[in-house]
Length: 360
Image (tube, rainbow, N blue to C red; front, side, top):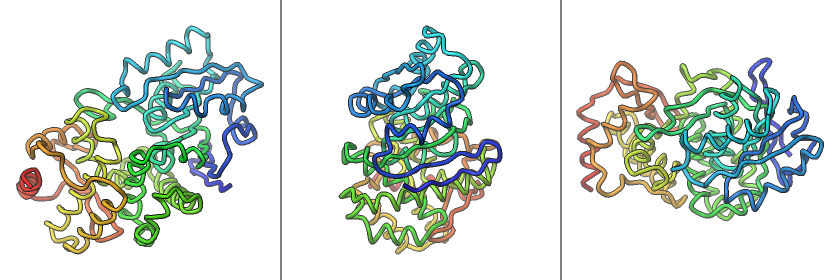
């Protein structure tokens, strides 16, 4: 097992990464402050891992909420299922919520924890690759709105993150690839050496080799922990983690949540960000080919969805947390392995690139 730290002063918490970690009480119960535990999971994960997870809490009053599975259920209506259980079972303000599942479960359980009685503790046990390398770390929680993804939420840091990579063995291939999109992102924004490692270890990752997965997860978590420690509430450098996300969120919203997986949309978004970076003369065409090749080798899409127009993309991109004074801020590539945030670019050039992409 490997343990990392997210250094946030008094709110510092550990990330434990390894195999056969589910149900190990010593890794999780020290971070529970009260005597009540509510496990939030979904219909897919509950039959696989809920019983094993609850076994770690034999000395606590426990309950569970099983949500429907999918991005389309990440909304305020479904969120109320968590609050209903908390209130009906008289859970108090020292209750700990445990998020057992992927990014949707983690975001919703975290937001419920941030909101219930004005804030209770929670713990992340991510079971998808995307959640393990990204959404479980850093305290971003929330739900979607029909007009924009993740536009309702709060920053609320977990007490700890427990990553059991054995859970990836039950993850379907599409979800595994979706998680690899977020893995690639870390290599592009500030870790060229890791990007090169990914190019050389694609087959091992797709084959779910435990050594390769453990290395990749730990590398991503360490990169994210460092960034979050410097910029917890995304006032500066943390926004680099959104490479591809402004484009990607627009695609998810436009198609309908769940039609295109988050990681798939981010993969397309990273390709668009790379193309636009090349249009601006920041990287060259060979770099774009290199990025696109790795994304496609990871069984991810690289092109805008059929029928998705440039005007639709730009309109939806306006509903983004990074929009400032009406300007769409983008995360672009200064070079391979170095990203930056800017709203200083030729908007018409962006529009023309998207028109060309939508027609190709």
